[in-house]
Length: 304
Image (cartoon, rainbow, N blue to C red; front, top):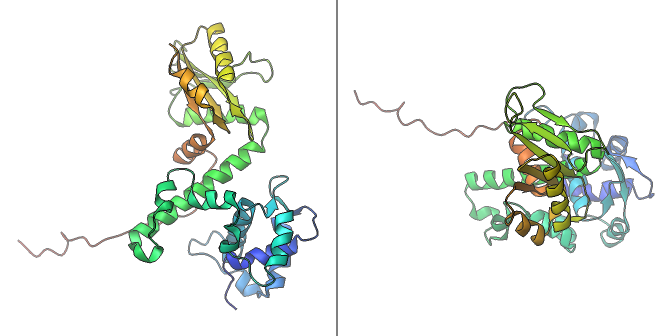
């Protein structure tokens, strides 16, 4: 039988965790494969890159989409549990659960629409059939990037505050700040940092430095008061440059405040953080490279 699409895996995945217990995706692999009726050969069929099987790839996408619709929850990294929405979906859809069903949930609509650079693209009225192959390829790439960004933020929010502080230093170094000095970036001692979570030396002697503040929040919005506290910490260090990085977002008051003060403070919210990590390859790896080729007209020219 053909390997089911990721949408066709929605219901088998929910049915496998219907007991309400916490399951890991690896534990569910064989159970779902048997429920679908895949053979050993079909389970081992690999995508063109050879780095992953079709089955695991599509099961992973099914997990992502169900999670975005709130039908499953992730109590810990790599662990999954059905929600009340998921149980209701099994009742509402005795045969197949599709994206059309998931679109009743606003958070899923927001996810598929793309809250970042793809928002305008997804709101267009054109369908895939109206797009050129190149446009479909770019659209798919944008969707994959949005999904990766969302996965990055999910992983970061499950890490410790200490890890997040090291992450922001690593990001600044990956972006080229700190030069080549071995100690260009350092994370200050946890809980005794005086409001400073990292320091980036912009030259080998440390004559000019950038001070970092890192807040690993799940929902909290960073307000003006937090930025004012960061300014106070910069004053204690006699610093004029700072970067405030969070996994959540900044209020309008906080954004307006940094535009009124003399110090140069850059605000990086969760969306921008994920985008920078993807751009500079921090916490990500290249899964597959596709090359788009075209005719070389010069080669076929017979002019002397």
